[in-house]
Image (cartoon, one colour):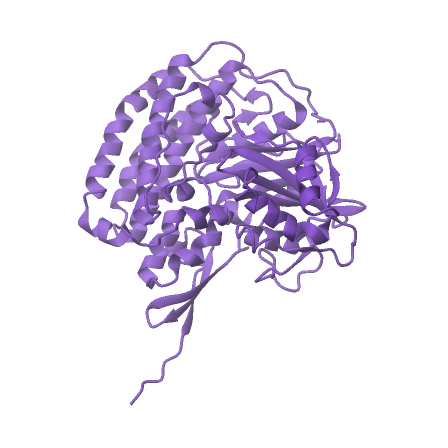
Length: 146
Length: 367
């Protein structure tokens, strides 16, 4: 059984490494500040005992006031999982750092979020629309797109 | 005198017999050797995620049939598992066993298509494909018995399955379980000892284990690279923890290993099927559910080991009758991430079989 790591404990470990990275850690997930995403991702991948080598999925969710991007991580070595979240509050130019340099599996998934949710990922090697064509008006997966 | 040379860009697809649907590869060649490859997607994008946010939880089950239509049963299963996790629904024992039986039949059917289409790409035109269709037909007959459909089953329900199995189902399934190992031997004998196949497939399109993990590959593609990771055992769902089965893994992660892993997985699926039939309890096949399900506010990620890899559904509920967010973790889309790494340095004909060995379904890639 894949054990889901407790958000509080991982939040504590991340805080020891980067004091200002964690916004909230609750029982099931860790919410971190967007600008600290990349060092936290590297920390989660490389720290012995955590070893999150496998990025399962990335999802963008539009909660009226902010966008939340959810990363489901798994460690194949230890068979444990973590839900990592980050938020961006701008509706005009939401942006986050790309994690493709840490987990290349993020490549198409970040392009998908950029295409359908309109969040751009800085540092992505090929950030273009993936399903819709260039020039498509709007971002269909936003809640205000009807 | 030096000849002037320059790389040439060729579009393979979106209409091409080997792309298994409307998929385009933008390939840059130096002579006949591939120096760059970019998958171009979206020709079959139907906005299923957006559509699902306007329909009730139950109405979304037939939408999942239309993802990977070669594995509709497992798509249904992944979705209802996610909803059950979100809403905290308990499923009757008999329904759990029926789900496992359907999922494993679906896996065999999907692998038969994968292997058949792959051999088609290798140049064994249509003959092996029709051998595979012979057995796939029997599986489709079994599905037709339980739900009346042969492609989009819409069989799973939140809390169970739609119908109990008819009387003629179990004898037909037992016959299938008894015959199938012999047929798998037949494929293996026809193909694995074929020198042309070995020359085309061995050592071609290698995906090292480390890269497979880093690019989030899953399913047979990941296991062919030697990573023993199968969600049925790593994070058991339904009643998979009660069955004894092995996880075949490849050694080098080449095209041949991906073919071999699928053949071996079919054998393991037959093992699971025979155990599930023996253990099949009697009783209800669906829990009693409200007409309009309103799961509590929250989120859930349900995932299964689909025939093509890890199929996951991420659902967010705001306590209304429709999901607030409905995201599909499509295994075939993510398995394509490493396509460029596998094909660069090989020739055009190799790119076709490397692509075929990933086994994708465009309806799921584009959604």
